[in-house]
Image 1 (tube, rainbow, N blue to C red):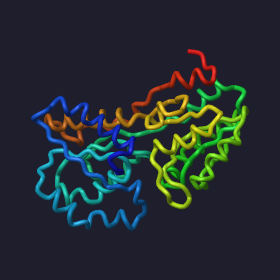
Image 2 (cartoon, rainbow, N blue to C red):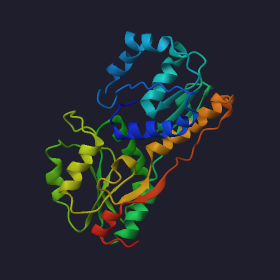
Image 3 (tube, one colour):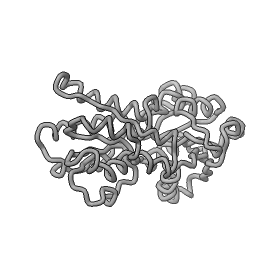
Length: 287
Protein backbone atom coordinates (compact mmCIF):
# COMPACT_ATOMS: atom_id res chain seq x y z
CA UNK A 1 0.00 0.00 0.00
CA UNK A 2 2.76 2.47 0.86
CA UNK A 3 6.42 3.01 -0.09
CA UNK A 4 9.89 1.59 0.40
CA UNK A 5 11.56 3.41 3.28
CA UNK A 6 8.41 3.55 5.42
CA UNK A 7 9.37 1.46 8.45
CA UNK A 8 6.08 -0.43 8.65
CA UNK A 9 6.30 -1.41 4.99
CA UNK A 10 9.97 -2.31 5.26
CA UNK A 11 9.28 -4.47 8.32
CA UNK A 12 6.56 -6.38 6.44
CA UNK A 13 8.92 -6.83 3.49
CA UNK A 14 11.66 -8.11 5.80
CA UNK A 15 9.26 -10.61 7.34
CA UNK A 16 8.31 -11.89 3.89
CA UNK A 17 11.93 -12.17 2.81
CA UNK A 18 12.90 -13.90 6.07
CA UNK A 19 10.63 -16.80 5.11
CA UNK A 20 11.06 -16.87 1.33
CA UNK A 21 14.85 -16.44 1.34
CA UNK A 22 15.00 -20.03 2.57
CA UNK A 23 13.84 -20.96 -0.95
CA UNK A 24 16.69 -19.14 -2.71
CA UNK A 25 16.83 -20.16 -6.34
CA UNK A 26 13.25 -21.44 -6.27
CA UNK A 27 11.26 -18.29 -5.47
CA UNK A 28 11.58 -14.85 -7.06
CA UNK A 29 10.00 -11.91 -5.23
CA UNK A 30 8.66 -8.83 -7.04
CA UNK A 31 7.68 -5.72 -5.02
CA UNK A 32 5.19 -3.09 -6.19
CA UNK A 33 4.41 0.06 -4.16
CA UNK A 34 1.13 2.00 -4.44
CA UNK A 35 2.53 5.00 -2.45
CA UNK A 36 -0.87 5.81 -0.92
CA UNK A 37 0.62 7.12 2.33
CA UNK A 38 2.42 10.00 0.60
CA UNK A 39 -0.23 10.47 -2.12
CA UNK A 40 -3.63 10.09 -0.43
CA UNK A 41 -7.08 10.56 -1.90
CA UNK A 42 -9.70 8.69 -3.84
CA UNK A 43 -8.86 10.29 -7.18
CA UNK A 44 -5.27 9.04 -7.06
CA UNK A 45 -6.40 5.57 -5.98
CA UNK A 46 -8.81 5.30 -8.89
CA UNK A 47 -6.06 6.34 -11.31
CA UNK A 48 -3.63 3.63 -10.17
CA UNK A 49 -5.01 0.89 -12.39
CA UNK A 50 -4.89 3.19 -15.42
CA UNK A 51 -1.15 3.75 -15.16
CA UNK A 52 0.05 2.12 -18.35
CA UNK A 53 3.52 1.44 -16.96
CA UNK A 54 2.02 -0.57 -14.13
CA UNK A 55 -0.03 -2.74 -16.48
CA UNK A 56 2.91 -3.16 -18.85
CA UNK A 57 5.36 -4.16 -16.11
CA UNK A 58 3.04 -6.75 -14.62
CA UNK A 59 1.51 -8.17 -17.79
CA UNK A 60 4.35 -10.55 -18.65
CA UNK A 61 5.18 -11.83 -15.16
CA UNK A 62 3.74 -15.26 -14.41
CA UNK A 63 2.84 -14.88 -10.73
CA UNK A 64 1.92 -17.93 -8.67
CA UNK A 65 0.79 -16.01 -5.59
CA UNK A 66 0.26 -12.33 -4.68
CA UNK A 67 0.87 -10.98 -1.17
CA UNK A 68 -0.84 -7.67 -0.42
CA UNK A 69 0.06 -5.53 2.59
CA UNK A 70 -2.36 -3.11 4.28
CA UNK A 71 -5.91 -2.09 3.38
CA UNK A 72 -5.33 -0.12 0.19
CA UNK A 73 -3.38 -2.93 -1.48
CA UNK A 74 -6.09 -5.45 -0.58
CA UNK A 75 -8.75 -3.16 -2.00
CA UNK A 76 -6.63 -2.68 -5.15
CA UNK A 77 -6.18 -6.41 -5.70
CA UNK A 78 -9.84 -7.23 -4.99
CA UNK A 79 -10.96 -4.60 -7.51
CA UNK A 80 -8.30 -5.25 -10.17
CA UNK A 81 -6.87 -8.70 -9.57
CA UNK A 82 -8.98 -10.39 -12.22
CA UNK A 83 -7.62 -7.92 -14.75
CA UNK A 84 -3.97 -8.06 -13.69
CA UNK A 85 -3.58 -11.57 -12.27
CA UNK A 86 -6.47 -13.83 -13.37
CA UNK A 87 -6.88 -16.85 -11.09
CA UNK A 88 -3.75 -16.02 -9.04
CA UNK A 89 -4.32 -16.69 -5.31
CA UNK A 90 -3.88 -13.79 -2.88
CA UNK A 91 -2.57 -13.62 0.69
CA UNK A 92 -3.23 -10.35 2.53
CA UNK A 93 -1.61 -8.97 5.68
CA UNK A 94 -1.68 -5.75 7.67
CA UNK A 95 -5.43 -5.27 7.16
CA UNK A 96 -7.23 -3.25 9.84
CA UNK A 97 -10.93 -3.73 10.63
CA UNK A 98 -11.10 -6.80 8.43
CA UNK A 99 -14.57 -7.86 7.34
CA UNK A 100 -15.27 -10.71 4.89
CA UNK A 101 -17.25 -8.22 2.80
CA UNK A 102 -13.96 -6.55 1.84
CA UNK A 103 -13.30 -9.54 -0.43
CA UNK A 104 -16.48 -8.91 -2.46
CA UNK A 105 -17.24 -12.60 -2.73
CA UNK A 106 -13.84 -13.63 -4.05
CA UNK A 107 -12.81 -17.04 -2.71
CA UNK A 108 -9.19 -17.41 -3.81
CA UNK A 109 -7.95 -15.20 -0.94
CA UNK A 110 -6.62 -15.85 2.55
CA UNK A 111 -4.52 -13.76 4.90
CA UNK A 112 -3.46 -12.34 8.24
CA UNK A 113 -5.60 -9.83 10.12
CA UNK A 114 -3.93 -6.87 11.82
CA UNK A 115 -5.69 -6.07 15.06
CA UNK A 116 -4.48 -3.61 17.69
CA UNK A 117 -4.82 -4.66 21.33
CA UNK A 118 -5.59 -1.26 22.81
CA UNK A 119 -6.97 -2.77 26.00
CA UNK A 120 -3.73 -4.55 26.93
CA UNK A 121 -1.75 -1.34 26.45
CA UNK A 122 -4.22 0.71 28.53
CA UNK A 123 -4.09 -1.94 31.27
CA UNK A 124 -0.31 -1.65 31.13
CA UNK A 125 -0.45 2.14 31.54
CA UNK A 126 -2.84 1.78 34.49
CA UNK A 127 -0.60 -0.78 36.19
CA UNK A 128 2.73 0.98 35.66
CA UNK A 129 1.55 4.59 36.13
CA UNK A 130 -1.41 4.53 38.56
CA UNK A 131 -0.81 8.20 39.41
CA UNK A 132 -1.29 9.41 35.82
CA UNK A 133 -4.87 10.21 34.85
CA UNK A 134 -4.72 12.10 31.54
CA UNK A 135 -4.01 10.23 28.28
CA UNK A 136 -3.07 12.35 25.26
CA UNK A 137 -3.88 10.20 22.22
CA UNK A 138 -1.95 11.35 19.16
CA UNK A 139 -3.72 10.56 15.88
CA UNK A 140 -3.58 12.11 12.46
CA UNK A 141 -6.56 12.77 10.16
CA UNK A 142 -5.68 10.13 7.59
CA UNK A 143 -8.28 7.42 6.87
CA UNK A 144 -6.12 5.09 8.99
CA UNK A 145 -6.14 7.58 11.86
CA UNK A 146 -9.90 8.04 11.73
CA UNK A 147 -10.44 4.26 11.65
CA UNK A 148 -8.15 3.78 14.65
CA UNK A 149 -10.03 6.46 16.60
CA UNK A 150 -13.31 4.61 16.04
CA UNK A 151 -11.71 1.40 17.31
CA UNK A 152 -10.11 3.05 20.33
CA UNK A 153 -13.33 4.87 21.27
CA UNK A 154 -15.02 1.53 21.91
CA UNK A 155 -12.23 0.43 24.25
CA UNK A 156 -11.67 3.82 25.92
CA UNK A 157 -15.34 3.99 26.93
CA UNK A 158 -14.61 1.21 29.43
CA UNK A 159 -11.79 3.23 31.04
CA UNK A 160 -13.51 6.50 31.87
CA UNK A 161 -13.11 5.76 35.59
CA UNK A 162 -9.35 5.42 35.20
CA UNK A 163 -8.40 7.86 32.44
CA UNK A 164 -9.39 11.15 30.85
CA UNK A 165 -8.74 10.89 27.11
CA UNK A 166 -7.80 13.82 24.87
CA UNK A 167 -7.54 13.14 21.13
CA UNK A 168 -4.87 15.30 19.51
CA UNK A 169 -5.64 15.25 15.78
CA UNK A 170 -5.84 18.77 14.39
CA UNK A 171 -2.25 19.95 14.49
CA UNK A 172 0.52 21.31 12.32
CA UNK A 173 3.99 19.86 12.77
CA UNK A 174 5.22 23.19 14.17
CA UNK A 175 2.57 23.11 16.92
CA UNK A 176 3.30 19.63 18.23
CA UNK A 177 6.41 20.29 20.42
CA UNK A 178 4.72 23.13 22.34
CA UNK A 179 1.66 20.95 23.05
CA UNK A 180 3.84 18.07 24.24
CA UNK A 181 5.89 20.34 26.53
CA UNK A 182 2.68 21.35 28.36
CA UNK A 183 2.24 17.80 29.70
CA UNK A 184 3.13 17.10 33.32
CA UNK A 185 3.20 14.48 36.07
CA UNK A 186 -0.49 13.64 35.65
CA UNK A 187 -0.14 12.89 31.93
CA UNK A 188 0.82 10.07 29.59
CA UNK A 189 1.04 9.85 25.78
CA UNK A 190 -0.50 7.12 23.62
CA UNK A 191 1.10 7.54 20.19
CA UNK A 192 -0.87 5.88 17.40
CA UNK A 193 -0.67 7.36 13.88
CA UNK A 194 1.39 10.45 13.11
CA UNK A 195 2.02 10.63 9.35
CA UNK A 196 0.23 13.76 8.17
CA UNK A 197 -0.68 17.10 9.74
CA UNK A 198 -3.79 19.17 9.05
CA UNK A 199 -1.99 20.97 6.20
CA UNK A 200 -1.38 17.64 4.47
CA UNK A 201 2.35 17.60 5.22
CA UNK A 202 3.72 14.04 5.30
CA UNK A 203 6.10 12.94 8.04
CA UNK A 204 7.86 9.61 8.41
CA UNK A 205 7.49 7.41 11.49
CA UNK A 206 11.11 8.10 12.43
CA UNK A 207 10.79 11.88 12.19
CA UNK A 208 7.39 11.82 13.91
CA UNK A 209 8.54 10.01 17.04
CA UNK A 210 11.69 12.18 17.09
CA UNK A 211 9.58 15.36 17.29
CA UNK A 212 7.40 13.96 20.07
CA UNK A 213 10.11 12.22 22.08
CA UNK A 214 12.43 15.23 22.08
CA UNK A 215 9.71 17.41 23.63
CA UNK A 216 8.21 14.87 26.06
CA UNK A 217 8.95 14.59 29.76
CA UNK A 218 6.20 11.98 30.24
CA UNK A 219 5.99 8.27 29.31
CA UNK A 220 5.01 7.45 25.72
CA UNK A 221 3.28 4.20 24.81
CA UNK A 222 2.52 2.80 21.39
CA UNK A 223 1.06 -0.16 19.52
CA UNK A 224 3.38 -0.62 16.50
CA UNK A 225 6.95 -1.78 16.10
CA UNK A 226 7.96 1.17 13.90
CA UNK A 227 8.05 3.37 17.04
CA UNK A 228 9.82 0.79 19.18
CA UNK A 229 13.37 1.62 20.25
CA UNK A 230 12.86 5.29 19.37
CA UNK A 231 11.33 6.71 22.54
CA UNK A 232 8.26 4.73 23.58
CA UNK A 233 8.26 2.74 26.83
CA UNK A 234 6.50 -0.11 25.02
CA UNK A 235 3.07 -1.68 24.83
CA UNK A 236 1.29 -4.62 23.29
CA UNK A 237 3.09 -4.26 19.97
CA UNK A 238 1.77 -5.10 16.53
CA UNK A 239 4.71 -6.19 14.41
CA UNK A 240 5.01 -5.55 10.69
CA UNK A 241 7.74 -8.20 10.56
CA UNK A 242 5.40 -10.78 12.13
CA UNK A 243 2.62 -9.80 9.71
CA UNK A 244 4.89 -10.32 6.69
CA UNK A 245 6.38 -13.49 8.13
CA UNK A 246 2.96 -15.07 8.70
CA UNK A 247 1.74 -14.02 5.23
CA UNK A 248 4.81 -15.60 3.63
CA UNK A 249 4.22 -18.84 5.54
CA UNK A 250 0.70 -18.95 4.07
CA UNK A 251 2.12 -18.15 0.63
CA UNK A 252 4.54 -21.08 0.84
CA UNK A 253 1.60 -23.38 1.58
CA UNK A 254 0.03 -22.18 -1.66
CA UNK A 255 3.30 -22.64 -3.58
CA UNK A 256 3.39 -26.19 -2.24
CA UNK A 257 -0.02 -26.94 -3.72
CA UNK A 258 -2.62 -25.92 -1.14
CA UNK A 259 -5.56 -23.79 -2.33
CA UNK A 260 -5.97 -20.33 -0.80
CA UNK A 261 -9.66 -21.01 -0.25
CA UNK A 262 -8.69 -23.99 1.93
CA UNK A 263 -6.43 -21.93 4.22
CA UNK A 264 -8.29 -20.20 7.11
CA UNK A 265 -7.64 -16.54 7.85
CA UNK A 266 -5.19 -15.90 10.69
CA UNK A 267 -7.70 -13.96 12.75
CA UNK A 268 -5.52 -13.48 15.83
CA UNK A 269 -2.92 -10.81 15.12
CA UNK A 270 0.58 -11.98 16.18
CA UNK A 271 1.10 -9.24 18.80
CA UNK A 272 3.34 -9.32 21.87
CA UNK A 273 4.44 -7.13 24.78
CA UNK A 274 7.69 -5.28 24.15
CA UNK A 275 9.57 -2.82 26.39
CA UNK A 276 12.52 -0.48 25.96
CA UNK A 277 14.86 -0.88 28.94
CA UNK A 278 16.27 2.64 28.52
CA UNK A 279 12.78 4.12 28.89
CA UNK A 280 12.03 1.77 31.80
CA UNK A 281 15.05 3.16 33.61
CA UNK A 282 14.08 6.72 32.76
CA UNK A 283 10.63 6.38 34.38
CA UNK A 284 11.57 4.07 37.25
CA UNK A 285 9.78 0.96 35.95
CA UNK A 286 11.11 -2.18 37.62
CA UNK A 287 11.84 -5.34 35.67
